[in-house]
Each structure stands twice: as structure tokens, then as C-alpha cells.
Image (cartoon, rainbow, N blue to C red; front, side):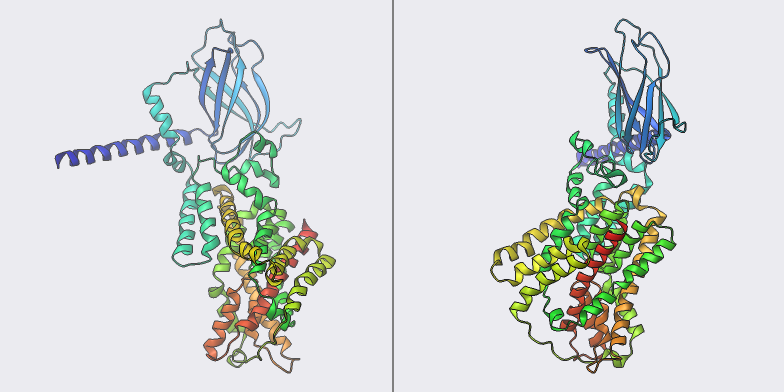
Length: 533
């Protein structure tokens, strides 16, 4: 018993000591304003002094020039090195200087670094670079046991997190999203991978995702070729190149029945009306100071279609991909919470109890011709929407033609599940602390609610307007299903309708505007890309 108590006490003491060292090392790391020298060793084999610096600031820096500030007979040549290197937060870079093997090594040397903040662009003749000087001691390459322990402690996750409060906040946000996905079952298939991707990217020091590879909206293939990449960097290429959203649309098409839309073509108008929310939000985002491309990406949240939002944002405003993707999927999960109050506010109880006639049967021939015709028509009007709409219709044709059953099952299950995992983790990884925690993110969250509200209201109001001219009235509740959250929005229409009339069945009628909304949001995305891309 005494041994167990003694062992427990020793464990507690060791953990406390380790935590203290981590805190001390983290404080020491953050005490450096911009850079620290993590190592300076003379390699006797090739007579070179290797100086390694680390970016300890809160963001990316652009190096302009670096060198040894104090001339001495240690060096054989000029000691300043021109460079054009981006150094992300916590990243290191090594400089090598030729040394005179016969010279005496001084105790300390100042290392001078010229740099630009925020990964700025260096312009020839620019006199604005800032200067940082770090004094360092040349090491023989052998460290004391205490130095090794301190160096190890400084590289722990505790040290990284203590030096960056934003990363701690993002980790907590990822926990909240995981709770919503697992416990509340809010869009768990995508919200859970997104939340875990957010967790991985904010566990600093893992190197699993490197924003520098995708800086300024471009893929820096030279960094990938140099081997400077992590796992999620490779997975994210599927998002950046627009592969995952299109593959998901193939799966969505294979799981969608366009029969209700074909049987009641008027529902196409309701799906189109819901897209007004996209363009209304675009105007609002412009008034809040976003650029045209950013406003278009924010507006597409109103389409209630995650893959479409990701596809559009990856082209127009990749720097906002993280916040927009999280907002889009979060609000898709909250459709049962957001829509009912708006639907009840805009309709009377008498309108909510309107019963609609059963839909006519749709032939197999109609279901086969429909996806082909839609693809061609969309190409004639908005060619830039073809990647999304075409993939959607391909998936539906695979399902409806009846001769590709194996492909249909694969697309609906294996392909859909694999791509969903890759897409979710990749998108979540873009929600880094510096990108996500900003006023722009708060604005995007607010505009996302506005987009959903406008889309829902426009669908309901158009249905009420159509009833002024129709002999057979339609229930305005199905207009709210014009947002393309399939089939959740249609189920909400059914639920709200049955609250007023338990015997009223609106689900199949609401599926018409619902699938029309999928097509409509893809076309709206194509219009935005064509006009703003």
C-alpha cells in the first residue's frame, strides 16, 4: 500500500515539474517579440556555421535579409544573405555561413533579420522592412541534460497552447461542434469530421496543415515538391481544386428522386425564389465592407447547400473557406430551429391547413430524360454551373437508368462516405486560430442567419403570391423547402403543416421545391462564379 502511495506521489511530482517546465519554456518563447535562435552550431566537416531561427510572433512573416551583425575573422566572406522566404508561426529556418576553420569562435554574435509582417510582398526598393536582432552563442553541438529537457518541454503541446490563446479558443469551439454532432445529432456526418479537422489544425506544432502552401488563394506547388507538407495539405487539394464538392453531388444525385419536381413543375419556381436569399445577402455583405467575391461566397450560405458553398468559396474567396463552411453546415443542421418561426409568422392557420392533391405518377422514361435535359439547359444558360449540376444529374441518371445498379450503390455508399470524411477534415483544418477568430467571422455568422431567413421567407411568400392566380391552391409551407437542405427542409414543411392539421401530408409535395433548390443553388453559384470569379 505504501509503495502505491509513494508511486502516486512521485507521479504527481513529476507531472507538476514537467508542467512547470512547459510553462516556463512557453513563457520564454513568447517573451521573444519576433524571432529566437533555436540553434547555432559549427559543422566541422564542411566549415559552416548553421544558425536556425524560429518565428515566435503571432502570424506569418516574410524574410527580406539575414546575417551576422558583427564582422570578425571567423568568416571568409560577406555574412549577409538576401532571402525571399515565408516563415509561418512557429516555423524554423536555417542559414549557413562559411567560416574560417583557424579562427577563434567568439562567445556571442548578433543575428540581424530584416522582415515584413503578415507575409507581405517584398517590393524592390522598399524601405519598410522591420529589423530584429537576436544575440546567440555558438554551440559545439552537445547540449547539457538540462538543456535537452528544457528544449523538449518547449516543443510540447502545452508550451504551444500557452503561447497562443486563440488556439485554445479554437480547440474549445471544436469540442462544442463535436458535442452538437454526437449528442444533438446536428448534421453529424459532416459536422463531426469538420470539428475534428478544426481540432487537428489548432493542435500547434503537429505540422498536419500548413497555410503557407495555400497562401494568397494559390497552391504553392514548390513547397509540396520540397516535401514541406502535412497529411491534410494533400487532402485539402481536393477542396482547393473543386474535386470533393462535385463528387458529393454525384452521391446526392444518386440519392435524390426528382419525381415530385417532374410531376409538379410549378415547384421549380419555389426553389428559384428561395435563392433570392443568396443575392440579398450578397448586398448586405457588400454593405459590411466585404469585397464582391467575398460577398458572393457569403451569400451562397443562403442556398443551404454545403458542397455548393465550399465549391464557390474555394474559387472566389478561399481565405474565408473555414468560417463559411462551418457557418453553412451549422445552419443546415439548424434548419428545424430557424425555419418554423418564419413559416408561422408569414402564414395563417387556414393557409397551413391547405391540402394538396396527390402527385401524378412519373414514368421511368421521364426520369431518365430529365437529368440529361437539365444538364444541357444549364450549360446553355450558365456554363460555369455545369460542374455541380452535371455531377448531380450524372448521379441521378446512374440511379434511374436501371442498368448501373452496382455503380449506384457505390456512389451512394462507399464514394459518398469516403469523400465526406476527406471533405469534412479538410474544411475543418482551414479554421485556424488566426483566420477564424476575427470580426469577419462574426459578420459571416450573422449574415448566414440573414441568408437562411431570406431564403425561407421568399419561398413562402412566392407560394402565397402564386395562390392569387391558381384555382388549386398550394400550401405555402412547401415554399420554405426551396432551400436545398435535402430532405430536412421538406420534413420541416411536413412537421409544421401537421401541427395545424395532423391529417395533412406535405412531404412529397415539399420534395419538389426541395430538389429544385439543389439545382437552383448550383445555378446561383455558377452565376456568382461567372460574374465575380
